[in-house]
Image 1: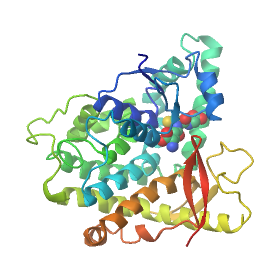
Image 2 (image 1 turned 120 degrees about the vertical axis):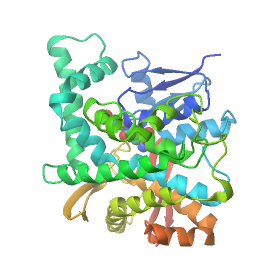
Image 3 (image 1 turned 45 degrees about the horizontal axis):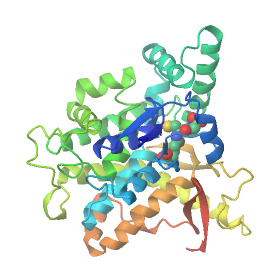
Image 4 (image 1 turned 180 degrees about the horizontal axis):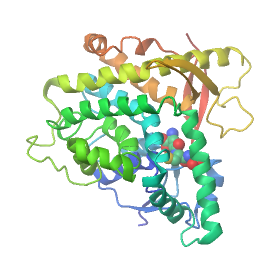
Length: 380
Ligand SMILES: N[C@@H](CCC(=O)N[C@@H](CS)C(=O)NCC(=O)O)C(=O)O
């Protein structure tokens, strides 16, 4: 049987989430690149150029890291489900899926694109090898110029600027220190095996922050246990290093103080942005009362952003791009928090996240045909 095929790039943030999951589940898959001759037909089928894409042995095409994980879960091929069975672990893990995928874009983009002296030769070779292997001379420069130009624009849209750079660095080092303290005692976020939160966090922490030369040095020289977790997340084996007796999760649905400390960081770093984005989306939805359910409400169904929102982040007024996909991940966290009931109330308060369940967009975000679309129901 043809194995699964994963279309992505070694340096791609979101490819890392799907890849890590497929490796951990020991799925038979081949990874390939956008230069693959099958890629143009795939982009046509999904309506936009976006990675990762998983093509199943049946020919089914699945775009989006979460959708890829859920596809494998649904087929029953997962060795160890990404979704913890106990309610607190499930909610906390989904929180880290959201934060990993969407909350660390400032350091991911800053450390990739603002250290050209150290990074640029690596990035040029890496990008061209995936987009047009063998290209030389002007063609090579043009391929890299187009891709890097787009990404440098995205960097600014996530709030990276000369003014915010020192704060991004300080904040990222605080994050690494907290995570390092946690991983010094726990091989994965919740104990002896990865869950959905680990798969979310690996997205920025491997391809950008552990693989690009400049930030790799920071992680390896100063935050060993985070680096070792990155290594673990790319290995089929558990690599418990004697830290944990077996592949079980922390007993009794418990969340250790080292992880509560990381949750407090998530609250400080990300809640103002999430709140501003929800407020912006609600104004936008109110201004589009005739929006047809099942669409993104925009002329191009592949468009991912609805605008930009300003908010206060660590003493800076910054403006970032609002993408409904984030609300899709946020809704998953909120559903898990609701299911956990009283068990999450004190933990959310302790972590400074009590407002998270109250951030509600007037329509839900759903996914259909590999796209993000607004649901029919008006809420809030
Ligand atoms: N929600 C998507 C996001 C995927 C995504 O943004 N992928 C990036 C690369 S890491 C991309 O394809 N960007 C489009 C571009 O490069 O133009 C997922 O999790 O799969």
